[in-house]
Length: 244
Image (cartoon, rainbow, N blue to C red; front, side):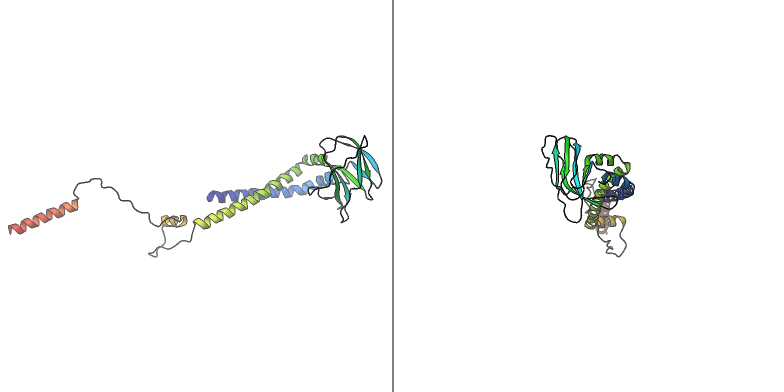
């Protein structure tokens, strides 16, 4: 129980320190995050309505097309055509593809994601009625992890919060064990304060008095001194009575 409580205190302290580091690092990493994640500042293409332009995709890349959101879900309304005229369809955004805030407060919504496109040269056509941004997420992530402040923020938040949850669980477990094993101090039957040994037994739930085991006689078969005196005294009394 003591070990559980000790580890709960250690983990809670480590969690608090890591979260504090993550929060401080976040404010210092914000300029780098906006610089790398803001589509208006970091993009491969920015196409106005009806425009098209060539772009080169790399193998194992992750490319996202975005439009400015206006409260309603945006449709893709784009075409990505390779060198031989085949269209790369891509996939719809998932829950991991969240909206991205720009430095000026503009919100950019993903409309199409290209994760399995073959490497090569493509032409992107904007068939919609709003501006289209095309960004490279893998390059942005590499740039972010090259910033020391972002790395400290990432590990501070990702490690600090789980450690806090574990510390809370351990604290609850230790508290439950204390309630189960420890009880209120009970006064002795004589009305005196219990001794240290009695307090320990009450805390651990042990019986008040241990059963004493009989000790074997070290001199079996020999007459005890008290009994021998009684027998001698008895003989003398008999002899005195008999002799008058």
